[in-house]
Image (cartoon, rainbow, N blue to C red; front, top):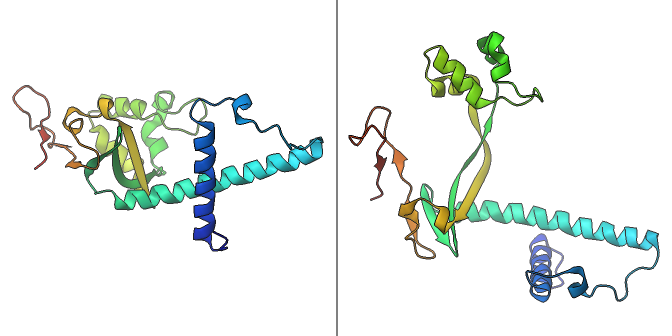
Length: 199
């Protein structure tokens, strides 16, 4: 393909990467790659070549992110879907914001919540403070660390053998509705939350 449109460039880039991956295999070494023939002989020329490698890597990363978003849009919402040896799920990507009143709420217990970097809130510490004060930890989290949509999708996956048992029976391409936890207080008689089984 010689078309200069973005889609054409994307396809060419993917095809080139796929051919290279096929040639090298999964367990290749630098010697196996046989890339020594015709390489630049000066540091300046090699620097230019490495710059091209970095440019291609950035392009591959950009393409990968875009394709992941499209893949997420094609996955059934609220379900787990198996492809190959992996189980995939998609959800709207959320961003946690920090409300101004959080530090006032933490007060003198800040050491249990703020990490050494002083930029990240340790949620387990925040949960512990909520419990000490007789408050629901999820209410405290929602109040001081509200989650807002980012406009992107988040695709997660895990090996079939590590997926929940009800997802391990899936055939490739098959989906199953995700189980959800019942409201707090509803149990199956053993003081454990009972999942709502898929239809």
